[in-house]
Image (tube, one colour):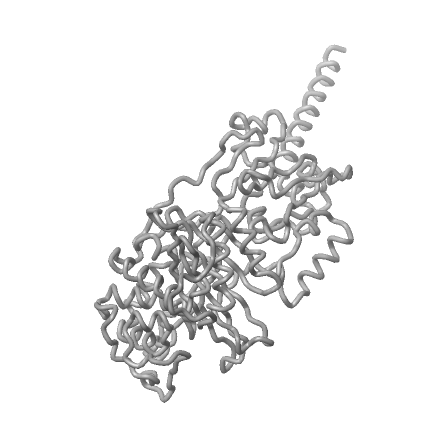
Amino acid sequence: MTRHIRHAALFCALLLVALVVNAARVQIVQAPEYDGNPANRRPDIARYQQPRGDILVGGEAVTGSRDTGEHLRYERTYADGPMYAPVTGFASQAYGTSLLEHAEDGLLSGADPMLAPLPLWNDVTGAHNPGGDVVTTIDGAAQRAAFEGLGRRTGAVAAIEPATGRILALVSTPSYDPGLLSGNSADANRTWDRLNGDPDKPMLNRAVRRTYPPGSTFKVVTAAAALDAGVVRDLDAPTRSPDPYTLPGTRTRLTNEADGCRDASLREAFEWSCNTVFAKLGVDVGVPDMAATAEAFGFNDDGVRIPFAVARSTFDTSVDRAQLGLSSIGQYNTRATPLQMATVAAAVAGGGQVRSPYLVERTQRAGGSLVATAGSRPSREVMRPSTAARLKELMTGVVENGTGANAAIRGAVVGGKTGTAQHGVGNSGTPYAWFVSWAQRAGDVEPKVAVAVVVEGSAADREGISGGGLAAPIARSVMEAVLGGAKGGAPGGRGRAGGR
């Protein structure tokens, strides 16, 4: 009898061991397979059982969470959704996440291990951390000025603090309300289909995800290359540039919108945006030095993240001399995001030094304790300090005496560069209006803001499209918002409104 009891006990022990082994196999070995199974709703239910952390601008949340009482309990809400969509992106139960909602998803959802009170605490206890908050660098007043300035136009604005690289504004229009995508209802599905089918692409973040030919705003880069290489030594000396200029090795004659560009000095050519002068300067500098300068500014870098990815701005390094001439005036294969061109302006404002732009100031737990901070970003030298000083002088002249008069701000020093970029087969596309600038209050030690604006002009006003006319007033309103107190208005120079 005792022997039968021992056998039964041994058999039960084996069953128990088998049960434990199988449970371990399911929970450890096969757990990823079960977690990833579309039929398993437990991860989604757990994910949405608590409110998502918030994205903050100026200490105020621009996001929130709404309790629906359903299995996927909390849905994302947005304050001023269209205005902040290029910053926040969307967080949808049906379509996932984008932009900052995606880049900081672990922290916002509470899944980031950094939120746990102790290492492996959640693994042992099975607890879920409250979602953390993301504090952005965005200046709410500058963001609103950019959004309202663009209005119903298609375009984008990027603004940076030159001394730090903090992104102060990031706007793209037309925009959309990310809150309409938050749930998994039929309305959210219809909104998704409508937005993706819209030819104006409202979900495209034009400030960081679209590249444009920068047109004459790229002449800032060409001027820097010419000054650094010693091709130009005196801002007021004639440049020996013909008008029109025949591109090397071709019969193509390059002309100008402005008069008086033949043999114009660099100062005159910059103020009135003479294509012939800058195309010839680019050819004289040569491909190696032009490419080196462009890449120092950030072109051809495909690793820029703010923390979400930024499209690569390009300067073609495999060009002949004629193509180099066109590239040097921001045409041919030269392409840039508005954020890249804001970085160009920031490099000039920063005395030739530039810091990588960033969007997240710090992350914190729900109670406010710090998780991580951006810290000081290393700077890189883009050009010689003496070159930057000369470019500040040239850009100031554009606003005071040239095509950028519409960006003037009373009580502030403003530097700028206009641009009107051609595109399409045979330049058949409606031109893009550009303006890049920086501003410094009188008495301040250094500029406080650098801005880039691009406006995709409509066919109806094709003849009136210019960087000075369309883009400069928007840049001025953003700079005024950052500076505070200073007001727009030309200081009384010989500037012409609506210049190219």
